[in-house]
Amino acid sequence: QVLSFASDPHSLSRSPWADFMGIFEMYLTTLTHKWYEGKQLAYLEGQEKLIQIHGFFTRSGAVSRKVFEQLGGYCEIYRTNGTEDTDFGHHVATQFKAFAPIRARALHHWPTRAKKVIRNAYVRGRDWILMAKRVGVFIDRSFTQREFVRRSLPIVILGLAMLSLLWPPLWWITAVGGLVYLAMSLRLIQYAHWVKGLWFALATIYMDFIMDIALCMGGIVGLIRYRNQKV
Image 1 (tube, rainbow, N blue to C red):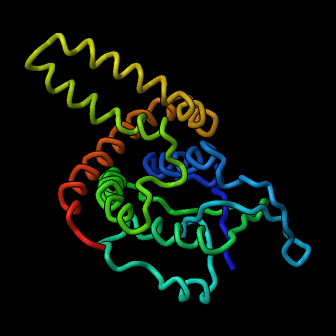
Image 2: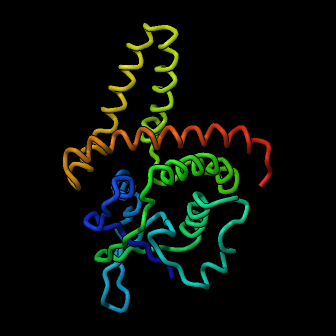
Image 3: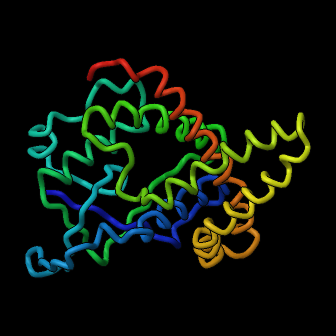
């Protein structure tokens, strides 16, 4: 009733931003390996090898109509797309067993323009506050504590860079923050290099930095907007 599909690293588009999102999704999937905890193997009609997973996203999976209706579909409290699939996926993963066909691969059509990618990151950051109140989690399965710190650093670095215009000695702290961010992003850089080469790996850092700033700004707005809202 619930299936999830891994992304195909070779089915990337010609858009740098869409390719970045595809690579970033695969990077997060391999980050914690939580999808493949338990190592419980099963077979579907004796033809396809499956492995039980802990986590589910609608953009790379499928559920039966019965499961969808039993869970009440997508929550309408979210004003736009960006978090409703994560919310729904949480309920799927906690109430049903999800399996991933090992041989199957999915192609998700990511946004091809920077404006859309940045907008989606902002909306997710903003609406994760609502999701936290609904399902009791603030971050999804791929956000380890280390990854949470890594993705929070860009907004701190940006703030320090702006303050350093008023007090130049802060440039040293800003530079150290940048080096820490690069060190913590090394695994992502290596993964991007493996998939698309050196130049794209370097561009990945820039795109990831911008996206993380949008994500954090959305989180700040969400805290202000939704802190007293009942869900």
